[in-house]
Length: 243
Image (cartoon, rainbow, N blue to C red; front, side, top):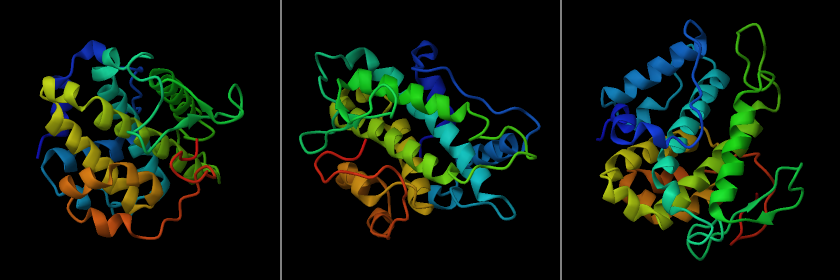
């Protein structure tokens, strides 16, 4: 299995799409982050690595992973963004069956079709705003997580998954050209096992990469078939998923 630790070394440092979000040393989240990285880098089965460590709080574990996935997906998209233009990708999609529309309740009050680079820019800015909001992602243990924390994380992870979909379906050749396929596959497997372990992304969203997931993620069919308790944004019927 390709090491996650080698991902940043493989990609050009200047290609990070958004600034990286870090954890403050000495905090619980930093300790959990280091624990997760140690488990991944030692080659532990990813299905086991994503499980909640004994004695730890689920919200902390999810918070750490949301930030980590943001950083990694940000890095992955940064490697292909030069080839993802309004001309090459006039619609944010994952092939002909899946089109994603943007809504944020502020500037875009209704789901709006946008070119892929604009959609992903807005998505990354939105996620970054969420994880920098200390009322949603508390920086210290004396501040509780809000009641909306899990539902917001589900929405963030659902939207981040769509970047995987677009990159795999429309820019896979670019990943192969720089030798990143194995590293991106490992990142995707980590993401997939995590969101299915805690039912954070609905199976209908995961359908866009179902065939590839079945090939690279052992046990994927059983995991994605489980009933989901996802509380992300209410959706429209396929082929266009909820914003």
